Image (cartoon, rainbow, N blue to C red; front, top):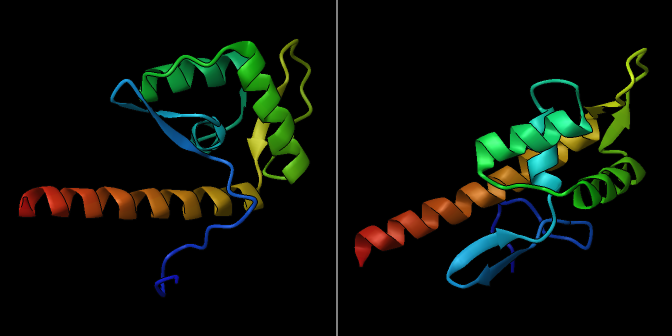
Length: 120
């Protein structure tokens, strides 16, 4: 059952987390890429560097561009016309909405975890 006010999980939710050697890691970089683009257009290398700086996660080019392709197909980002050699991308309104929903869900997980740690 879903609690009211919480974002819904559905088959389009793309970010999955796994625990590997006691560390939670992201299997799909969707939220990372959308978060990077939330403050403005960036080309692939700039997205990789931004994610490395704010999340401490290094995405390989194959991972990044595979995810970019999926995000474009879903309409969550789009390529922006540019005279430059590198192709910039922009988050769409739908991508921003998806990011907000996923961040709200993650926020709920963090709040619950913190509350339960204080109670323990």
